[in-house]
Image (cartoon, rainbow, N blue to C red; front, top):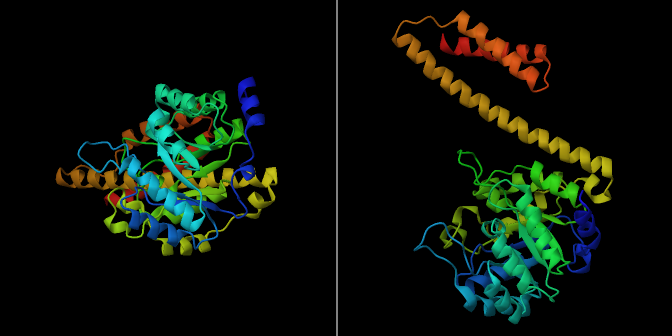
Length: 362
């Protein structure tokens, strides 16, 4: 840990000083986008019934990939968030992407601001936001950058801390990838874990909605986050998610949120904050993630095996190509050794895989 990170770790305000986190998990809930005052208020009334919900969220300015799509209602939505504050008593939060957004939110007493993943990657914009926050006391949540680079995430934290912001937290929302996976954004749990190692006092919140991209996966990812010791969740919640103007597939209803939270289990290690138990939970969750990838990769490998089997049958090629197999096995063992694995272990694994592949081609 650098001296500056040590300073940040010591100087960050404890989250309990600015948010009542008396339950695990504590939740930030609300729609991806504010669409109308009625939609915002109806959703807020729904999530306010849940004692775990501590903050209401709604996006007013939406950074979209393509033009001519819904880019948010903008400043008109600020008065809708005021109405939520007045009616439910919940603090409100929205995303800011430049100094003008910050100025408008501060004038309208928005309680908490967050910096989105597309902004975190741009040091110029982060610095502009940091400068606009000089002398204020508003809490700032910082989403990880869209690309899997811890340095950019830390850099944004450093810039805000340098501007005098002490009420800070990170939001893990996953990382973009070119490959097609079951998730919209890859969790890459090792990155938020490393951030937590470097800045232990920094509160970390998981955004399973953006990692998942699919409401069916939100509960699983929320449980993973709890297993990693992340006690806060940001879950996109909409009164009518199927007809949402943005990210419809990853939003759930307030009733579904209540039911989901009842099923989640916060491990006692996280509750008692026993360091060894917490670290054990994190490591086991990492192993679970690797195992899931192994299973997906094995399934993909067997699909290619089937294709090769069909090609061999079409051209009367024998199933067993012993010379290729021996060369392949030697290469696997060599690469395994380079990666620090036991050669006999690698050999045994690939012999089992090869035996199954031969059976599948017969």
